[in-house]
Amino acid sequence: MTIVDTPERRQLRELTRAFVTKEVLPYLDDWERAGEVPRSLHETAAKIGLLGIGFPESVGGSGGDLLDSILVTEEAIRSGGSSGLIAALFTHGIALPHMVASRDDGLIDRYVRPTLAGTMIGALAITEPDGGSDVAGIRTCARRDGDHYVVNGSKTYITSGVRSDFVTTAVCTDFPGSGSLSLLVIEKGTPGFTVGRRLEKLGWHCSDTAELSFVDVRVPVANRIGPEDTGFLAIMQQFATERLSLATQAYATAQRCVELATRWCRDRSTFGRPLASRQLVRHRLAEMHTRAEAARAYVHDVAERVAAGEPVVTEVAMAKNVAVAACDFVVDAALQLHGGFGYLRDAEVERHYRDARILGIGGGTTEIMNEIIAKGMGL
Image: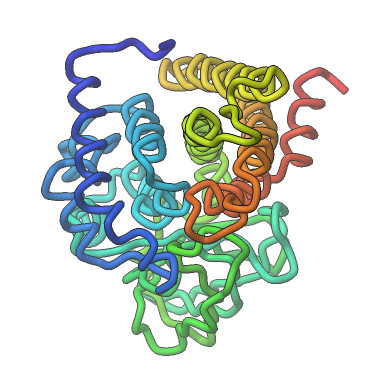
């Protein structure tokens, strides 16, 4: 493996595998059909130290860094979990970092510590109905009124938006679309803040997704993260971590599907011979394995550079696209090798096939990543 292996990281892998085996696999299909994971899962993950991985102990986390977070994500999926599970259980990975970076003790005590303890759930609200990747064009506005902001606007495609207790919300603090952004923590139950319909999706069924509406919502100025008009930079600074998480979900899903397809092809016989005895099938599995492992190695390499503080914006975009492309190829091939069974909800590979489609959209589309890469090339 490319990420330095240590006794502590081996233990972290074992802990993650045991957690998924005991606390997730017996119930995951039910959660998929219910459209969400239970709040109790957050508390269980927090008690054993998994929920706080990657967050410093000084804010209630379990310590570790980006590389440790990547190992947890990878092992959770390789153990039979899913990228949808990661999205639902670890949404705080995108909801909290801005608060931690601000070093605002008030926000940390009110939101970060309880979330890492599993007693609160946070979400991040950036995307709006009339704009996806255009962060600078955000139109949800916050007008200063004494010690409060008055927020009006709407958000959509918000992961954990149904279950969340608070939402880290990107707002415009000038005129709509001006690019003058700030981040406000808006609590569920605040008058004027409503959760619209639960959005039904192609995949990530166990991860609830919502539309949010803000009508004259009064938010204390104390709930602002950092100085006014610094929200755009704060959002951009956290994109590398989010994109690497999605890249990890992609290559780990590919690895899991290689394992599932290999097992199936060894056990399944046609015309009196195991599928794996046929050269065409063996070569397809070999290509799947090669793409998955190559993506994993590159993502690990880029993650190590990010963890070391290197400014590798272009490489992060390439890592995401490489991993997503590998995943797309592998999940399609894996389902094909499973034949008719792969098309059934009873097949684990069917869930991965559906879940994989969002990975080239979330955190910046493949096309946006290509634009970043092109700029890095000087084009």
